[in-house]
Image (cartoon, rainbow, N blue to C red; front, side, top):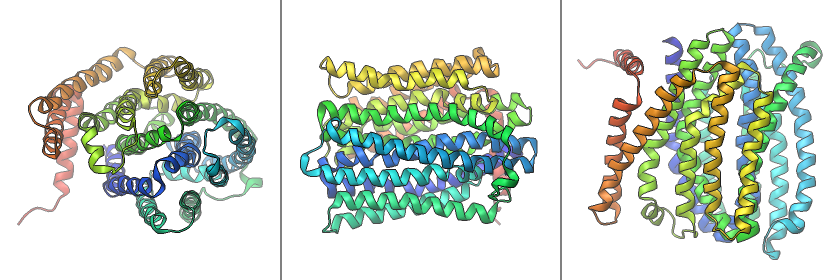
Length: 511
């Protein structure tokens, strides 16, 4: 119960952050799109948009170090955490240097025949790419600090930095609206500087706050641990890199066949998908350390319970928001954006379907990492992650429309799901029959019934803001009912009720 309360408190911090940041981010996107225009916005999402992708790479890489930190936390070994941190510093410094060299090498080919960018904007695109390289170095080098923050479950700091980041981004959006300089270059520069500043703040905080954050390579460097972490981090990096390249490859393939205007539509879809999926990602960020600590403490039963419940809650949180957005997306975009790039609506709808599928088994990745036997898993899953880009290229060569790329990714999300289930069974002895019964079956039934009920107003009410409001209300209520009666097990309902009672008992009583 104590662990659950800590997870709930940390989740509360992160959702308080989201309550502030989501609307700021979406409004900021509107300002940036208006200031840059469709083509420059597409260029930024094609080239400089990779800066945002670094967040994903950072989270994936910090997950490897966090696994060792959280595992040591579960074992109760303080000195081992100091060893882990110093080994991690060395590994990520080497990784940062190698990645920077590779990026600069790849950049030469990107701007000499691969990317389709108007000739007058090539120099601006190159500038943004170099900003990306600088940001990449600091991002990778700061991974050990992010791992320490997550291992200590300090979500209050994460929430504060998230709010600060959103406010500064909004300030950047206002600035480029009125600046007389090249808006695209200024935006890329300021976004890169923002990522560097935030990472430096994390480093300073960790050095003052946590005892294990003490850089003394000579004293704490452990060769045996270094070999173990290098192997684990190497395989984790393979999976993270293949997933990252797959994500970035979408923009490249779309650009090769359809130009920067379609990249603008992809950029808007990514913004919406990112903001909505962060509602479930927030909960997982608070829950994941508990999974690794449970394995470290030898409590695999608790690890399975956290994984199953986390998978369902992650899906349900995204489902509650996604269903009404998918239904009323055209009218929402009319109110949100003054200029809606072509294909934006269908891109966004298909992306949300993919993200929903990803939630079903997203915690299984954490479960496999917690056990630690990841070599074969990362090899196979990397092939699954990178394959959609190859198939998308073939599909476009055959003359299919731009949105076909998302259909390809949806198919491979299903393949990735079964891959995760298979390796969870092999590595951690996952009870597959219980996972299908208590997670997948309940999720599918809950989603189908909620969707059918939510879409009914479309057939009886004319399009408009009033219908959007009604759809959101009906969708929210129907989703809550179906989640409670179909989505949760009896044990989960009892646990939820006891948690609500404990929280209400702490609230001040009315006199």
